[in-house]
Image (cartoon, rainbow, N blue to C red; front, side, top):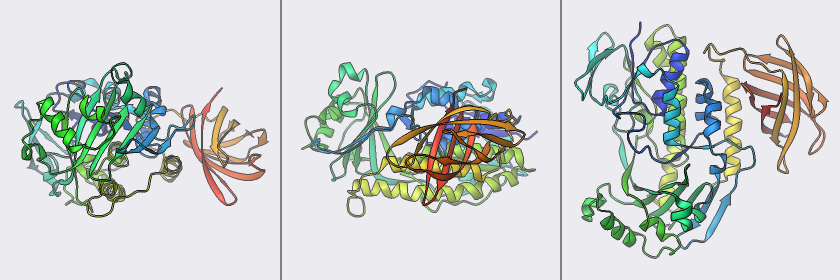
Length: 494
C-alpha cells in the first residue's frame, strides 16, 4: 500500500484526503494545530464556481457548503479615503458564483468528512529529507518520525516540504495587512456594520493605505488595515504588536486625513495581527522529484487580490487525488497533476500579484479601474461549465446521475435574470422533455454531463443548444444562441 502523507490540514490538504478516501485510498494528514479549532482561523473566503466549488463537488460536499454559505456576502462597496462611494455591487438572487463562507466553518466542515483517525493534530513538521528509492522521512516537533512514499506539501507559504523540490522561496510584496476584528458589530460597532453591509468594503487612499472589511457569520466583521511598507515596519517604528494602544497610535498617524466615519476601523478593533503578504516568484517552477509534490500556497502563494488562493488549493487537491487514483504509479500521478497545475497557477498568480501592485500604486501608477463583479461572476459560471464538460467524469464511485424531474432554471440572456422550467425524462442515455413549454430535442446524458436543444422564447424567440452538468439536485451549464453564449443554473423541484 502506498504511504501518503499530506502536510497541512487546511482546505487543500483536507480536500485531498477526502477525495482520496472517496477513491478508497488511505492518506494521513499532519497539522501543527492542536485541533481543528484551536486557533483563530481568520476571516471569510469566497469560493468560486469554477475552482473551489468544483473541488467540493468532487468531494461530495457542495451541498454542505451551500448550506453554510452566504451568497449575500458577495456584495461589494468601493470608497475613497474621504468616505465617498465610488461603486457598489449587489449580487442577484440565486447567484452563488463566489459565495462566502467563514474560514473556520469551511475547515470544520471538511475535517468532519475526513476519517478522524487519518488526521494527526499537534504534528508540526520540522524536517523532511530523502530516505532513498523515492521515499521521504518526516520529523515532527513532538518527536514522531514517519516515512512516506508520497509527501504532499499543503503547508502554506512557509512550507517545510517545498525545499525538497528546490523551489524558490517566497518574496515580500511590499504590502502588510493588519488583521482586525469587530465582534457583535451591529450592536457594538453600528457605524462599521452600516458601512460594510452584507458583504465587503474596500476603501483606498491612493497613497498606499487601504481598509478592507468583510461581513462574517455570527454578527462579526473581520478585515485588514493594509499598508505599503517594509516587512519589519513595526520594528523600524518601535511599535510592539502586542501593545494595542501603541499599534492604534501608530495607525492613526498612518491613516491621517481619512474620514472620521472610516477611522473606527483603525481604532476599534478587538486585536491587531500583522500579516505580511509574501508570494512565490513567477513563473512557478521546480525540479520534478519522485515521491513529493505541492499544492495551494506551498506551490504558488499569490496575492489575495482575486481570491484565487484557496480556490486553486482546493482544485489542486481534487485533481491530484484523482490522478493518484487513476495513474499506475505515484510518479505518473504527480507528473500529470503538475503539468496541469503549474500553468494554471501562473495564469492566476501574475494577474493577482499585479492587481495588488496596482491597487497600492507599487512600481507604477495607481489603477483607478473598478472591477465589474457581475461580469466576473458570469465568467466563473462559464468557466465552470467549460471545465466540467472538458474533463472525464472522475471515477469517485458516486451514484449514477439522475436527470429526470422538474428543474427551475435561472439564466441571463439580457435584461436581467429570467426563470424557466425544464422537465426531463430519460430512457438510457436519451433525454426528452420540455424547456419553458417547448419540446427538448436531441437530448443526451453522458455521466454527469448532458446536452439538448430547445427554443428560447424570451427576450425573443431563438433556437439554443444547452450543455450542462448535474450534481445531485443542482444543474450548471451554458446555452448557445446566435451571436452569444450565456450561463444558467438551476435546482430540482421534483
